[in-house]
Length: 445
Image (tube, rainbow, N blue to C red; front, top):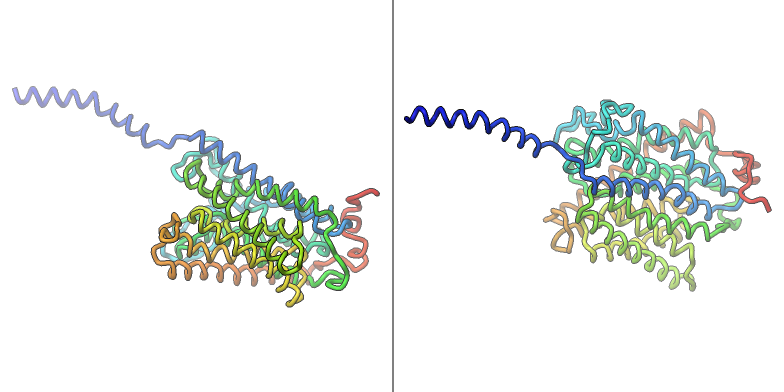
C-alpha cells in the first residue's frame, strides 16, 4: 500500500513538475515594461532636445552676430559626429564590462572592452535597465545623447576663434580618450575605477559637466584670447535666443536627470522635483547676487543661473531631498556668478561663454555637495552614513576627473596645433567665422 502511494505521488509529480518548472522560467524571464520604455524614449528625446536646438540657441545668442552660424554649426556637426562614433566604438568603451572585476584595478577599470563595438549582439529583443525592463537600443540612444552634449558644451569656451576642421578632429579624439573612459569609470558598474570608489554621480556631474568645463578651460587657454578681448566690447547679439535656449535646456533637463533613473519610478519622480527646486533657486541666487553687485538684474544673468542650477543638481538628483536641492541650487547660483564674472576678470582667461565658470565650477560644487546632502540625516535618500567619508570620496572623484581631463585635453590640443593649427587667422576672426568658415551669414540685413 505504501509503495503504491509513493508510485502514485511520483506519477503526479512527473506530471506537475514540468509545469511548475515552466512557470518558474516564465516568472524569471525578463519582460519588457512598456511604462519604463515609454519614459526612457521620452527622456532620450528630451536630452537630444537640449543640444539641438537648446544649446545651439543658448550659445548662438551669446556670440556676436558674425559668429552665430559657426556656433550652431558646431553643435549640429558634433551631434552627427558623436552619434556615429558612439555606434562604432563609444558605447563599447563606456559600457562593455569585459575583464572587469570589483575591487581589482586593471586596464578595464579605465577603458571598456570592444565586445559591443558596432553594437554587436544588439537586437530588438535585447533588454536592459535595473530589472531588464526596456530595450537596450533605447539605453544606447539615451546614453548617446549624453555623449553628444558633453563635447558640445566645450564649444562655449573657445567660441569665435577655432577652425571648424580642427574642432571636428579635436572632438573625435577627445570623445575617444576622455569622455568614453570617464563614463566607463563612473557608470559601468563593479570594476569601474570611480564606481568602486563609491563616487555618487547620478546623471553626469563628473562625466558631463566637470569633464566639459575643464576641457573648455584648457581649450581657451591653449587657443588664447579672442582678438580685442577684453578691451573691445563683445556683448551677446541676441539675448532672446539665449533665453529661449535656456528655457529649452531647463525643460530638456528633466529627461537628463529624471531619465537617469532608467525607470518610471519614485527615484525619477524625486529627481524631477529636486531638479526644478535647484534650478529655480540658482536662477534667483544668480539674479540677486548680480542685482546687489551690479545694481541691476540681467536676462543673461538669470539664464546663466538656470544652467548653473541644472548643472549642480545633476550628480545629486537621485539621492538628495528637496531641502538639499534648495541649498545646492542657491549655492550654485551665487558661486557660479562670482566665478563667471569676478574670477574670470581677475585671472584674465577668455572663456567666451563661461563653459568653465558654469559647467566646471557648478559641476565641482554639485559633486561635492552630493556627498553632504545624500545623507538621510540631511533629508537625502542615499546610503551615506558617514558624510565626511563620502565627501572625501566625492573630492577624489572630482580631483581625478579634473587632472585626467586637463592633461589629456592639453596633449590633444597641443598635438593638433602643431600638426594642423587650431585657430583661424586674424583676418578670418575679424570677418567672422560664419563667412570665413562656412561662406554664409546668419543675417541678411
